[in-house]
Amino acid sequence: MARLVMKFGGTSVADLDHIRNVARHVKREVTAGNDVAVVVSAMAGVTNQLVAWCREAAMLHDAREYDAVVATGEEVTAGLLAIVLEGMGVNARSWQGWQLPIMTDNAHGAARIIDINGGELIKRFKEQQQVAVIAGFQGVHKETGRVTTLGRGGSDTSAVALAAAIGAARCDIYTDVDGVYTTDPRVVARAHRLDKVAYEEMLELASLGAKVMQVRSVELGMVHNVPIFVRSSFERPEDIDPRKPPSGTLICDEGDIVEHQAVTGIAFSKDEAQISIRRVQDKPGVAAAIFGPLADANINVDMIVQTVSADGKTTDLTFTVPAADYERARGTIEKAKGSIGYERLDGATDIAKVSVIGIGMRSHAGVAAKAFKALSERNINIRAITTSEIKFSVLIDAAYAELAVRTLHTLYELDKA
Ligand code: ADP
Ligand code: ASP
Ligand code: MG
Image 1 (cartoon, rainbow, N blue to C red):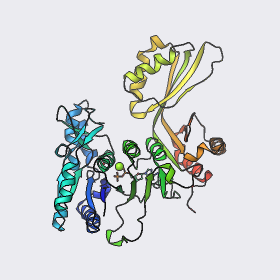
Image 2: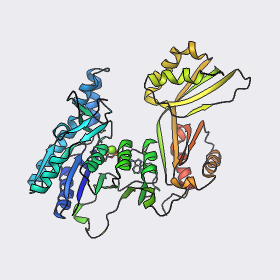
Image 3: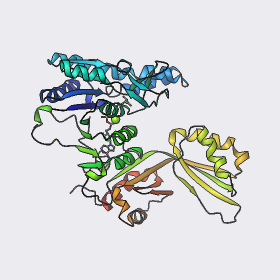
Image 4: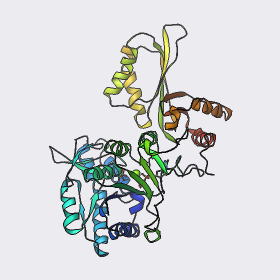
């Protein structure tokens, strides 16, 4: 008997049939004697629709009202699942963020959880074996009492934070794939499922484009040592043999993984834009003049490459920003032209970033060099490169993203046997 958090994503609760399937998974764990808290996402497509309505109502809208609107998707699912569970004879009730409460800061649209009160849930587990069905993605701001949301994909974070708060033995993330793969299995058919992946690696995979887990949820799992198990909700509950270990991927400490290959996985993101500032004055303070205003505008700069100047007076500086911030970033640089001093601004939005990740890179030399050769043999031009201890990323034309991912997937022997 254990305390468990089970989280179900949008496609897993897409309609009432799916919700009934989810309820059977929950009942399976309750019958096995576990205390269960369930975290649910909005039904597939609902959050997108709510976001679109906010934009249609007014392109520039109050973030507090945006949260009031988009948080509702999860509330519908939580109520429906509680109804279905009750109908199956399972004692259950739904909870919205403010009812627990799940306290957050006031960064509306991308709020961070500060504290979760799980006391009432634990009391109800003990006294009446009641299943708690919690609306994911939402919380409440401590001081103002206003509803907040945690950023897209935020139900993962609700689930892991809740698992930490109630001291759950495990946080199961049920989704539309049966685990974490070496790369997105919808893009590379030869990708294979990983049995285990270290928090650090999952953190890199997620922040570099693999959307299977929200980045913040992995961070929380790592800090609070919550074992996270990614598995499929589409497996029929009746087909699961409780005596066998379930199939899925465990996100855990690197020390719990016996052998590290040089490369664990490959992530990619097509939502990148590149800006090159030509013939920038090569003098102290220029980088600050460029990146200061971008930071003030809350624009995340990722890869930065500066070429050595030929004449000693000017240089070219290239960096990437999220594609959604491209126009704003250009505008910010143009406004600061006087203090920066440059000749021309070039940019491109059809750019992709492909990243290779693996803790094994710490002990294997020449991992990245192999990739550069393989990409050049495919005539894929690398616009920029960054490296760190357990990953490297290359910036390439978006048209070559899939080819590059497949090439590297084969190169590092990740293809399914
Ligand atoms: P949910 O709605 O359950 O939260 P998401 O759509 O957010 O599910 O995440 C699951 C999706 O993540 C999968 O359908 C898959 O296409 C994508 N994905 C990207 N990279 C990976 C990866 N390395 N392993 C597994 N899934 C991945
Ligand atoms: N419904 C929210 C979204 O679509 C949160 C989530 O599903 O995790 O982003
Ligand atoms: Mg998700």
